[in-house]
Length: 565
Image (tube, rainbow, N blue to C red):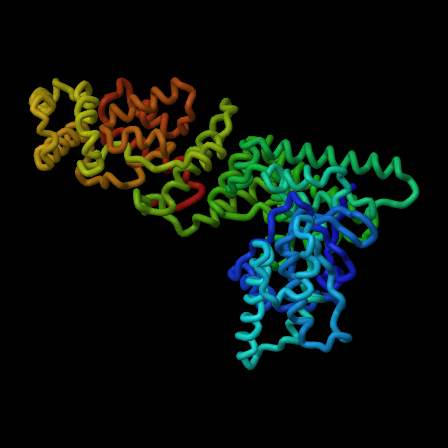
């Protein structure tokens, strides 16, 4: 069974490390060396509450396999390990030989004299490319310390102590028979030592279990591994994942739960692993089971939210709009009865928009898309016969826009290359029974025949007249950018008819709906004229349509934000 622990750099000193031939040679540059030295320098150890310990700087994992007593084959991390050796070697030179620390040794399989060379890396040696880079790295270390020592506040002894005793590596020891297989997996990205992979090793460590009952221990390890896989497999369902999260993460999604449980203030990449290490390393099986039960409790709560339609939609909206965090919702959900929790999440939405008025929203307002999303979600929930779920995965992966229902007079929104197609598409919708309808068709045909749509002024003039034709039933007093002329639509569909006239937008919506693509219910209601009196004027967005749409916006959203003109 693979094992994992944290080791200070001082604890590495008795070891002998072997770098096998399948590893690439040492290639760190001065930039990478300086980054490591600066990171350690900038880290300030602080007291850990209610303990005698201090915090530590955490280096990325070193993956090893035991070859013999205190001898390890390095599967991953040899670049960091070699650099650490060089820094320790440099700091050792401040002492006479008999007072120097005994350092760990490194031996490269493909460089027979590498162990000897590393005894004096300050000496330039161009016999092989590895020695060249190692010497360059050592020179960079010398220069870094020389420059730092020019600063009156720099204390080399303090730095040495911080490096040896307050810098730790994540020590990942594998028991797999073939280390090349482990190396290959790590380096082609099929698995990576993320927080999740490291925490998994913590839970499965044999040290967590009582000694003497190997069969029971093995059975429990298998149970945890299976339960782990079930949670990960479930979170791979994009509908569940994007209901909870915005992050486009393909693997180790279980890490989402671990990050929620991590209440430390640290922000380094391995903060979550260190949080669990502090709570599991050296603890009892009961402690381990307690934390595993908490992980399962998070997962079960998420499934409860996901399967209950009202919770799914309202929590999904809250998380999408960043009105509250999932951790806060989890604790409230655990503490309240279901009816109380639903009242609570309703209040969260109301509080988030308590200073917002519906009629202050327009095309440029940052809140408009969120409010249109809320409008669609609440409309879905108000229909007791509707069992559909809003696709938060679609909303987050495909990007959604707000779109004008009646188009604006903005000929610049039609790309030059699309002008001919725009004229051809709109022609069949011009109503010849309306004033100037036949004239518009005649002018349009002449423009298409003569190709004069290339002339900016001529196209703009005709575009404006056609737009006016389709907007003729709109009040001149109403703002075309206002909330009552806007709808929510998926970005790809939106691009397909950007600033098209109303009937062309309507046709596009119908085609998408017929093909099985998702169209938000309120957007569908608008373009299919569900708000309109019968018979509807299907080619026009009228003032009456807009007023009916406004009334529905007020009816649905009135409990969550101000709706006063």
